[in-house]
Image (tube, rainbow, N blue to C red):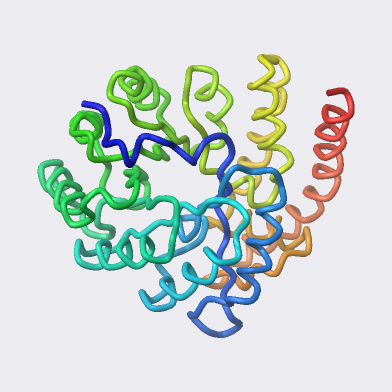
Length: 314
């Protein structure tokens, strides 16, 4: 089945930056001023859209009212469409957040299976069908598969849900190339969008037809992910592979820390106000972070030089 006419136009393609969410010092509340400054910056990078309150945005730390309030202000501030994660541990909470996001004017919503507790695939399927029923097709809904943090949306479940025509697409952060391939094989026929959540797979996925990426790396180094998008659009596969190797270097470095500490530190080194980590680091992690800072500055200079040279050459 094709998706309904009101979901036929996809505003989310290319690089969609997964934004960090600055937190007030010594509080669990969102630093709204710092968040809006970040939205301003990200909206001027050339990215097609911004994703708010996803895993990179550490949404689990914030109350519903705080998330709702931040989304409302961000919509008014952003120069590009917003894709907002409305995931919650309950169906009612996700629906409430989604209704509020829709009324604020966001371009679409992401929703994980209910997090923390594990659910069977029939329950995951029923959750999404009930969610879609509650939304009445008023806003594009994107499934959000991220099994590292919550119940997986198994490929059979994902394809079955996509075939209902009630969902605009899916963001896959499983890191599985086979999973992405199976989604892409069905996407043209079923009429849904495929968004990649694993930065290191983006160039390959884009080359086989994926619509875009929701990129955490892009919040710290947007120039790199946008250069990959440019290379893919120009059919420069060698350059896309070279730039993807740079992404892998960054991902390897930040993989030593709890997520998204490494992205947050890289953004902070670029003078963004991103707030404090959610929890204290171990002594070893703190030493690793010092090493990361020393590594990041020359690495960034080299990467920015490569991206700037491509822009001049084009």
